[in-house]
Length: 440
Ligand SMILES: Nc1ncnc2c1ncn2[C@@H]1O[C@H](COP(=O)(O)OP(=O)(O)O)[C@@H](O)[C@H]1O
Ligand SMILES: [Mg+2]
Image (cartoon, rainbow, N blue to C red; front, side, top):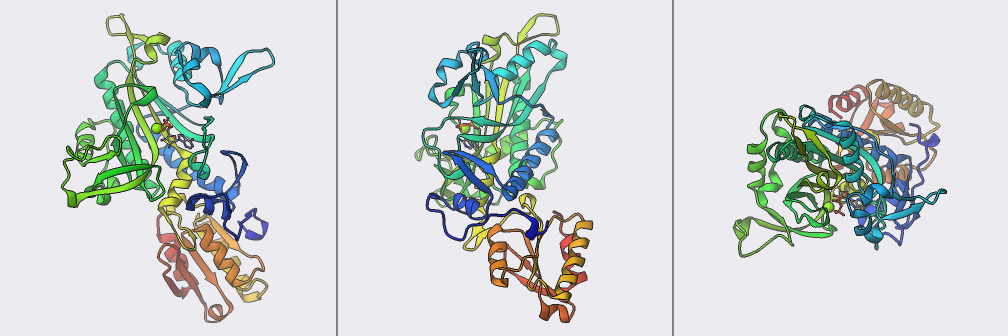
């Protein structure tokens, strides 16, 4: 993408309405625009990040055996009357009346709808286990939307729903999501720690929140220092195997939110215990027959008898993650995107647009990067070198490939790693090799 043809409305000053760094940087980098309290447009740069996050979530859900569907944002109120939640949900639910005076709502979650889909289509135990998910916008009329996309009113969530014949198999479904979640966040360069959670209004038996550590987090958390150097991606996972030993191993490392933490009973030695703030980026529940029972979601068991299915639900805050990743990865100059979610792989910086040699070298590199499958943002505008560097540092692409008149006279360009600030002068070929050798 040529910057001169792109839509990147960056802002120099710190927006006064933004209280935390991710909100500030998302506005400054031209990623989002607020349309109403807690409701945002995603501008091109932000949209690319959102899609990258979404795709990692999707790949890990698929790997764990979940199947993607797409349910609507607008739901009929009658569906929610069957579970009793229409009245219980309160003011967080955005209620709508259509032209025929039918009560509708903008979905805050989809347990009822998925249970209805299941109830009317799945008849036999042979079709279980089943896990269906979608990635769809939700609306919750939060009293205090804040921190940009971190606590919005309209937000993008991945929500999955599992259906099983009995509690043992439901636990196996829960474990698959548990492991998929750890992998998902790790692939985004995040350390998300599962913490036993209160089951709250959704209710049920077993629940974990996945929390990343960041100073601006809304919750206070405690964890074993061992979590900080755990590497969840180094293990090959076979999702067809029994994952319980693996889950038990992970859960043996202590971690708890302040509500669940009890200093007197904490098993971690004081010098190993870390107290930090955290951001909830995912939440999984096993809630048994809470919805299947009132809604009559049964299948025929092995002997033909009706069995009420056991369910779980599994959420990931896709749009919140865009902010959460920035909270975890930024510096004074701006965002520092982990490679896997960066909106572009490379910033190609022409220090003197209009100079024949610089332009030719940039065009050559731009074409070669495209051929190698690298998404490149080519800073081909006539802004000053300083302004270009400031913008590229702000938007935080992993690599900056800098082409200037002095270097190019000797056949050299400069490659800068955004995360470390390290700059190395090298030939065009060497730079290409470095950029294409790195996965992602
Ligand atoms: N208002 C919001 N804005 C952005 N993301 C949200 C919001 N509410 C929830 N999420 C994300 O969706 C995930 C699943 O939501 P859920 O656990 O059902 O919500 P809650 O934590 O409010 O009970 C959360 O872990 C969080 O990452
Ligand atoms: Mg939650």
